[in-house]
Image 1 (cartoon, rainbow, N blue to C red):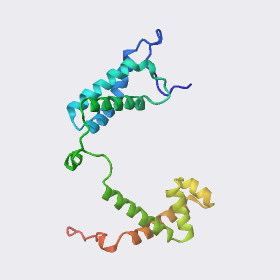
Image 2: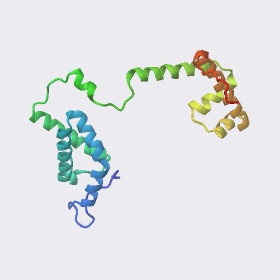
Image 3: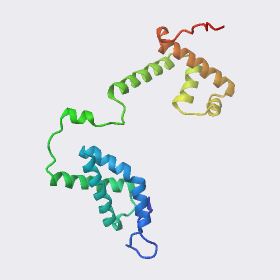
Image 4: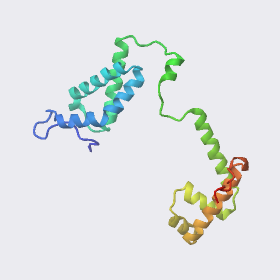
Length: 193
């Protein structure tokens, strides 16, 4: 079976943990495990304690790591069980208030921002669909299918310069449809001339 990550065994004595490998695991994954546990516990002190317990437990069961998953997912599994044990022991089953949830930082895009992005993407897609066939095909191949300029030219049987012209023309037309005239800033003449 192929291992996805190095197990913390010494080359000379199986089962004897190599502290350098464990140290590397801690350096590489500490922040992510801590962040996971911070989110689950809602408190810095508890997260610090549970992160330490996670790596202590990983050290104790490192000989069971078979490499069928990544080290990070293996450590998250241990962290999850450490958190469950902590929650059971401390009776932490109470519901959290809305204020508690609102104070937790989230790296994800807010729902209203995500909806605005989806609306914008939909408007752009509709504007592209309204283009002539040659412009629309060029945009779809280059932007939506991810082909390079040369690959797009090969696929359409045209010159790369024609692809560039079509993309520039398509973008100009899409901007006219998607961006209202009122929101485009009007250049003001420079009074210092």
